[in-house]
Image (cartoon, rainbow, N blue to C red; front, top):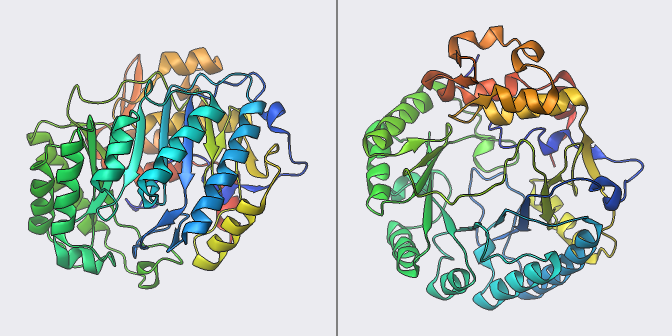
Length: 421
């Protein structure tokens, strides 16, 4: 089993979604469901990195941004009308790069989100993604004043040559200025994203970037393996480097452990006692997604708009979104059977360092997880006791193989049949 099959940030992946026929009204989709999380997607960036496969557009003109916010408000009003309750316990602005918006546009985004969705973003954990070029004091001031509790910044590497190799035009001085500004703004939780597996990267250069990040004592660090995917700049090179990435991962993991960080998942490392507390649990709670690149999910249906990576198709989807008036139905999605709900619970739990609670699974489904999924093929990577099924340290290192291995045949088939665009 290759250690790097794919990053499982959600199950099923959007490439398993298909047009829904008939398109169910959101009032039916959300009947009896608890939303839990609120996610707002801003599909704009100042540049597109060579490894990026996100749904994003570069160089959006101001009039498009204004039109997008207008449409976001129309969507939010209709979505809120479909919800029996809000009761959000956590929120995030992602993208793209939400701080592509100006300070005034960020204030408008927060205002419209709070007003339409009946939520006070200062009273729940709010995470916002940013970039070195857009983490400016005026934008950060708005975010902090309005209650943002976490800022996540994609640094990727502190070595300019590595950044250029990853097709990301930034300078270390710009990164350090952004980190200084975030710390000066007083955001409670700073997360720094780093990438390993860049062409020419060594253990020494990788640890250099980690040491540079540790100088800001971030509350969180995410260590991402570099993937090359179709339709991304680096994806056209077709290289594989599993052994190198595993070596770099282990070196980074061990260094962060020595620095006092606890491992939350293969990617996430956190200073003990610094995370924002939330009642949200992705295995059992739903998520409301706003924006043309956002996905939403309930216990029985995951849905979104059309998905694309290629620039031309992304622009077309954004243009269709800003022209849309009707947001009262789910358009593209995947309905989860009981087996798929069990499988999702297993995957989302097992890939966390704390593992899966057998009692929570039993309470939710009425069966023991090992009766439903014996997991013999993963035995060497599992730790099992009366209360928990979890991954060993080496199992966590192979999360990107274990997650895809647990996908259902139907989801695998749909993902295989998906034609990237």
